[in-house]
Image (cartoon, rainbow, N blue to C red; front, top):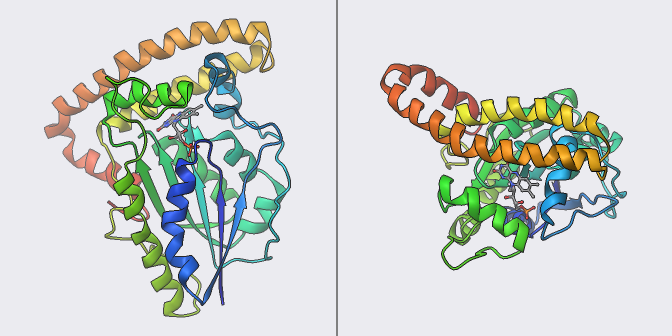
Length: 305
Ligand SMILES: Cc1cc2nc3c(=O)[nH]c(=O)nc-3n(C[C@H](O)[C@H](O)[C@H](O)COP(=O)(O)O)c2cc1C
């Protein structure tokens, strides 16, 4: 019997639906026993998000300051043949519940010498978050064998507005003139192909999974225009996060005042850096073709586009 552990967290339920789609073939396979570990923060994060609260968690999220979690309610095995780590991105970092879990003693115990598939559901900027998750997995001595990333389909520019509006109102289509935010229903349904391939590999033999199972399935798509934006954004996020963290604890007036300045800066960053870097990238594309291809291969690994 092969044992698979799925570690997950979802606020709106979107990532839970992605997890269900990927895991349905595994649940139907008699030779596979699958456990689900829902990560639960002691203090639940609100959804929809009040505007200020959404930003007050920014420093802890970016600095990955571990927050208290409830103990798991599922009985867990000592060792798994595969862990599927499903996470969403918050401020170019793994969401706070997931980064907290990755720093817990339980993660230390579960991940050691275990193959891992990361499963991301986010707006469309996940490259830097995955770099941070890779660093956690390396520290935990886990072996990342595949990465699946599903992103919002309404387009990069539109989702800059549509996704935050979803977060603030709780409605996936917050206004009639806005596109629907979130991962498309077709993409969620089609994610079962990853589960089918994982079943094939788990049933093929009893050997340890050491390399990618999902090559050729378009598990990720790298938007080359976002590579530079993510790097610049991530750099500025870490500077601001350290500054705001030092200003005061989460609910202090000093942090809230600092956050107001930061939100204006962030909006400026979004309307300037993202389109400018995208434009510069497009203009320089013929000269930087080789370097971009190398970067794309790096970020697409281990599953590939
Ligand atoms: C506080 C916060 C920050 C977010 N930051 C990002 C981000 O940097 N990049 C991104 O692609 N999506 C970002 N998102 C969108 C989430 O990754 C995700 O798509 C959305 O929260 C739905 O996930 P759920 O399954 O938890 O409901 C953010 C969401 C929240 C709540």
